[in-house]
Image (cartoon, rainbow, N blue to C red; front, top):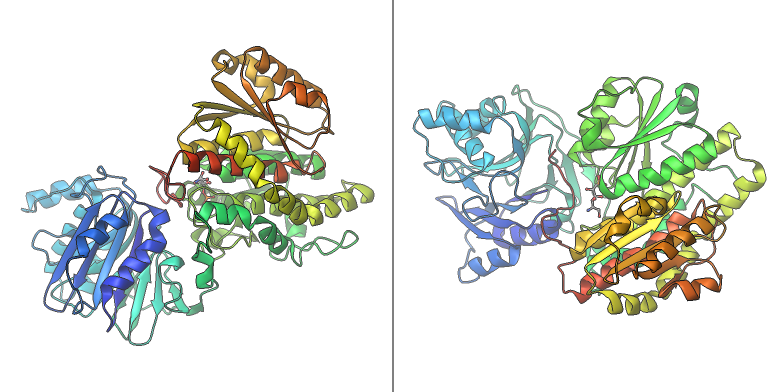
Length: 612
Ligand code: AGP
């Protein structure tokens, strides 16, 4: 949510900043801006909307002499997506210029304090209050660094800043508190970014700033202090991703690329962890014995798609390991009195590892001495620092705002975990355990089979893309599939789509059904509720809804009942959510593409939601 990039060196800053922002565009696209410094003055350029608008603003000028700069891509929190609210923001006299990711919670107090002191405000943002407050503190300090240290102690909330001043043009100051920030180490040049994609391919060595770090970055030096002004020694690490990870590789959208690479991703997720049906599952990083020695119940906390993975996990952990599991949206968990304790295993699922709600919830659980297990795609993310056990997804960088490959990797990882618990507790007999392991090993090939049939899914999407209402129904673990299918469609197509347990349809939503509605149902032939869901579909058909099935069934009757059938390979009901979701991802993609939507950057959304 919001992207930040900074450059200080001997090369022209503008191309570094724009390239960096391009790779961060998935974090927000309400406005974009850069500030560049040529040692005598700082010039600020901003544009509403996408980065391409900023590029148009910049296209008529040359910026060769500007070798330092900061850039920002905005996802609006305080203040509408207007030019006035676009970053970078300046202090009144222009001596402090900054970009910000996060929220300054006490900005109203600061604003009125500063107004009394004669400062004026020209935007509705919290960030402008920070710029003026830093300026105010700087004016009574011997250096920008000292001013920033004074100021950050008076700011409440979450903030990652890149700060420049015309008075000290040889440096950029980077600050991190509850919003990620890294420093990239080059030769005679250094970089700052809110995420690795911004500097991928430019440097291989980075420093992860921690909360409470202030880095003074010059072109040949990086000095880090804490908020008390003490020097902090930082570890230099190597970037784990190749530039290739953020290329579309010829696909029209990142989403399609990410859907298409899922069989390889799952091979990667399974590698070394599940190597044969007679061999134990090996989840290095997950302290299974410690977990089992003290766990009476499990709570899984997540948001959005990750919450749907949690729904599947509840089903399978209870079924395989017999441990009671509750799941909750992180944004709800953190504001209620809960019963989390030292005997609760708390699992936080987050693709990005930067979701503010999930991190806050996990911190709260950590304070209650729960064992924290983190399931994430980013081992370098903020949530990982609270983990007692870590289960990385190994899905590679996911660029599209709509989560696809990371969801499939979450499911597979959680199946491995559930089966590992069952293996250790002996709650599933050996024959079944081997069967489930065999099925997991076959997932990549079956994913390939579904993906190779994407043309027929596109044909169905071509037929129905103008429909304005979609219902997704399923039972058991696939209720999560229905909800995830609906979320995927609505977030990228803006079509009204809702997921329900199929049996709930008759308790209200059925009132909305008519010939203008599509009902997508997931039904697995070997399920105990197969006949029930058929009845639910009959009820929808009687209201003239168009019916589409996702199924592995060869039941002839389905040809009579359904308008369209999307076949998936045979799989046990327990593991079916992994496969059943893939056609729904493709449907959402092709429908949205037909509608001409900006698939990788849907309106109002951002890839990682770093505000509560
Ligand atoms: C998924 O398609 C969404 N964009 C969104 O719901 C996402 O899953 C949610 O914001 C949680 O993100 P996280 O997994 O990175 O914590």
